Amino acid sequence: MCPNEQFRRMSEGPHPAGVFSILEKDKNHQSSTDNNATMPNMNRLT
Image (cartoon, rainbow, N blue to C red; front, side):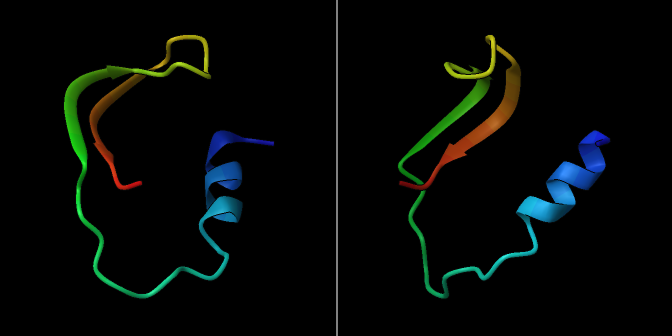
């Protein structure tokens, strides 16, 4: 499975309606679950 296909499948499900607050921003975030993958401009919603 190519990475784009995986992203497409994850984004097809229902999305909750509403207004969400940004709880944290990090310009140079490193993933704690995906082998320290870089996640630039991370915004934490929950």
